[in-house]
Length: 258
Image: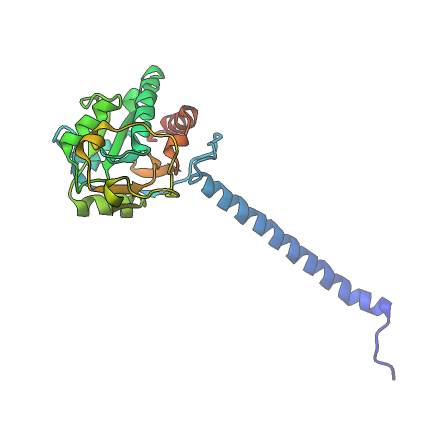
């Protein structure tokens, strides 16, 4: 007796199996495309070169809580920024690299916000990443040097203990910074450091103080909404256009509660 099935007999059982397999493969492909699209949308929030095109900004994390001292010697609690959109930066008053350029750019941008009627919705918050060598005197001088009035409403340059700044900047905003000795009395070796730019403005404060250490860090700009949530990270702040910043701020300002 021959137990082998003919082709016609096999078609009756194998065809449904092949159809089921094709359906399974199609489902897996659709799932993979959805995952890739989701990851891509998330990464738009981190990529400094990608522009927000009207899609809902993702929530990237919660900004840290703190109480620090501003450039006027006043105590400032992070709760004071609830309801405001924060443009967050990380600056060293003795920086001879991109900090001066970033400060000038943001001073010009703040004027554009006022013209657009958004000045009262935004606060500029900078953290002093050189708490070892600088304090409120150097912070005020730095602001004045690069186009800011230290008494500007909506401007907070904040400092505190080394431990506080490390917790807030490194752990809260995930921005790395490091104190390194200057080489043979000159600049620290920063070639190839994240965010390092050829273009830089002179810093007379650093030239006068001649600090023994440099602070290596990147020039990130982080946008925090009115509920204290990080919504956008530009990892190269000096290369971000005013249009990119304005687009994100307008998107958050148009959303109830940011």
